[in-house]
Image (cartoon, rainbow, N blue to C red; front, side):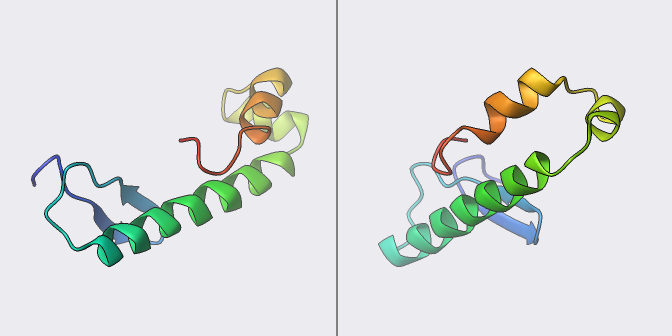
Amino acid sequence: MKPDRAILTSQYTLLPIKNSKQPWYVKMSYTIALYRRNHRTRKQLARLTIDQLDDIGLTVEQAEREVKKPFWII
């Protein structure tokens, strides 16, 4: 696996493209998929209870900080 290419192995695993020789529209589709994943997972994180956050090892403050990030920030 080359580290400069994006690999979409499943709905939940997306590695970003960096310096790839892929056409612009392929890079754009991966970028959009990454943005959508960020948005979706942050919405899911916002719905977790304090007990669930504790189970995954996050504090409420850490979760709030992550949820407040814009979708384009990884």
